[in-house]
Length: 284
Image 1 (cartoon, rainbow, N blue to C red):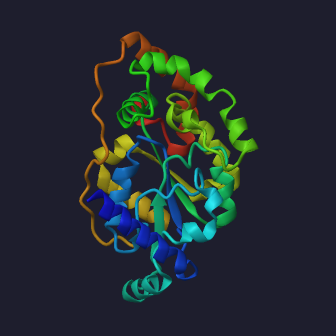
Image 2 (image 1 turned 60 degrees about the vertical axis):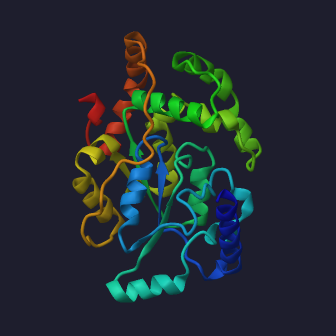
């Protein structure tokens, strides 16, 4: 079965490359953050008839780890323009292609690449309690085999060593991949304000929507309406809202560690308030 699936994907990629010039590019991206509900948002938006997901899979990861493949390769992942024209005629408004790659927010070069190749593109960013995100990310990477340290607290202690010089290395070798930067950034990825502040001068504040994922799961209709308004897409009913890609945590973090992490993230959460038009839900 796996072999058949891989063969089908190979055929689809070949077809996509051959028809690349006839395909559309995304109008918006779900850019992160990792373990913050991006899959659930992607699945909800994918049910809207005017929001067109990639042909093959959710995350293309072009602007972070596949940039050397070129724009024609990236374009091959999206729908044909003739299909979007038919949808535009049917609904009286232009459909929007999109994808979701949560490493875009954190990768030091992704923002400038997105700004250069997709002028006018919009970003949807989801954030959650960074302490919970760090624990979820550790469990996720451990389950996938990318993390070898089972103890969460020890993995946090290793982070600064693992990530030392990572951004400089990625900038010096733009097409390289840094394993720990991608898989072991438990604290760094939760400093959302740093990442958003890096994107702002590249894209503009009005083209970035930041969503509190705790509110998305609590009041999905309200958040969904806000996302559609940001994208300029008409409301055509609500999708089925479900949680996807969740990962159960093993054990519990010591209270002392949790308090220390909350203190660590406090200044970053305070800076995040201007992106959320208010205090993050986990700080209320």
